[in-house]
Every structure is written in structure tokens, then in C-alpha cells.
Image (tube, rainbow, N blue to C red):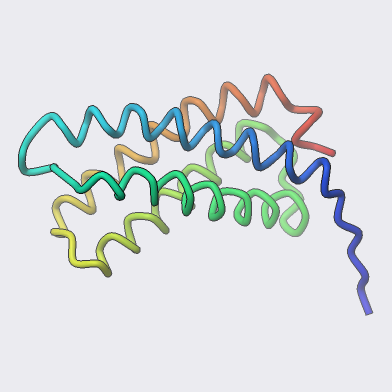
Length: 130
């Protein structure tokens, strides 16, 4: 039987970094959605993105670090950003958003999460590897 010890302090620090990535990405996403009436979304879309994106991001991060043994900050940022973008857009597709909208914003979300994730993961490497 495998017993895992959870380092709650390290997990909270990791969640804070991931949440910051999602908040920064959501800030830029807000402007993308306001670029055209076709991309307009209700206000709770952004709040939900921060909540669910942060939780999905932490789960993906933990799987990458603890089970797949990914240690490179760049690779962690890449795979976490991709996973969060795909999961969020799948959720929006299931909620009835247009396929063009979902596809376009899946690509946009990937890049708007990847840029801050890469910078913050490299800068906070030691905190993420606890």
C-alpha cells in the first residue's frame, strides 16, 4: 500500500503561483472577449475561469510533478497550460458555446496561460519543486 505525505505549505504556494498564472491570463482574456460582440460572455465566465482554471491547473501540475516526474519548469508550464486550456474549453463546449468560439479560445487560452506560467515557473522553480 502506497502512503503519500502531503506538504500542505508547498501545495498552497504552488496553488498561489498557478492562480496568479490564471488571473494574469484571465486579464488578457477579458480584452479578447471584448474585442467583438461575437465573443461576448457573461461576467461569471471570468470568475469561473479563475476558480476552475486554478483547480484544474493544480491537479494537472501535481500529476505532472508527482506521477509523470516532469521537473523542467518550461515543460511544466507547457503541459499545464495546454491541459487547462483543453479542459476549460471542453467545459464551455459542453455548456453550449459555438465550436468556432471554443476552438479559437482554446488556442488563445493556451498562449495567454503559457506566457505567465513559463515566467513564473522559471522564477519560482525551487518553490514548485518542493
